[in-house]
View 1 (cartoon, rainbow, N blue to C red):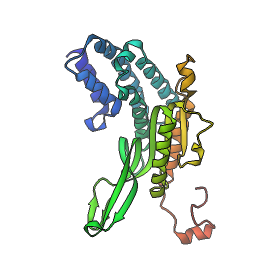
View 2 (view 1 turned 180 degrees about the vertical axis):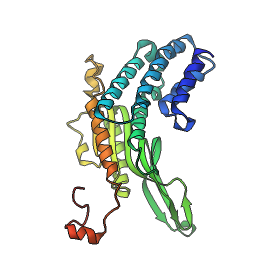
View 3 (view 1 turned 90 degrees about the vertical axis):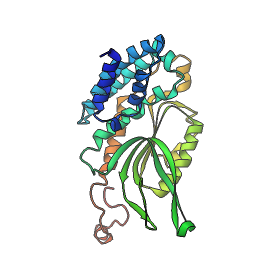
View 4 (view 1 turned 60 degrees about the horizontal axis):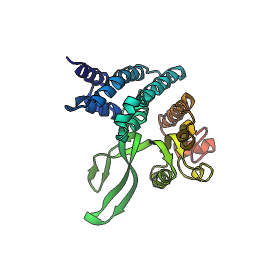
Length: 294
């Protein structure tokens, strides 16, 4: 077995099933399986692949989601992302925007897979998922429902059965958490996200919506993002893109922000464990809408 075939086997075996292979791993496997690879690509893969296997082994083998473990995972993430900025790697994959940009969605996908263990088995984690953000009921065909969807980078969904006019919608799911992930977040991206999340929150008001980026690429003082329905904008490197382009050293992805995301998402999902109280029960407590501590 050649070294490339061994790498392919190692990566595939780590995920146990083809359906569980996330986006960045799929991209890497595609490159390893290409029949025609020039010397630059071969050298880049020789640098990337062993580092990816080491990094993902750490990520897949830490299941308790403690603060200490998450710090270890973020250290491994930073080391792997530094590998992707190696000159011999960057020059090969710079034109393939989805290769580098698929690292963080995969990271959060795998983090959340651990986070949902022990919850309702209908709760799933998806990458590059089309989630429902709006729906329209109209009288065509004796009545139908039409869904408007938006693709997000990572989604935690609750699979449900939805039947309208005796027709079952096969892929219906309630979004619990939706996350957009960018390398550089500019004002146009942010504006587009704002419009989509406004529609989403009208349909699914309990969905947590985050925008996560490595660097900010907009005038933070001029954007009124705090008045939108976006629950939080996380800048993982705590930097703006401009100074980095002018030579300021790139910060690491900060573990405290990853911890905050994990803790907030975990707390959000825990709200749905218990059945909702009846109005009569809430009346005895004096709360009619959310209830005590909600």
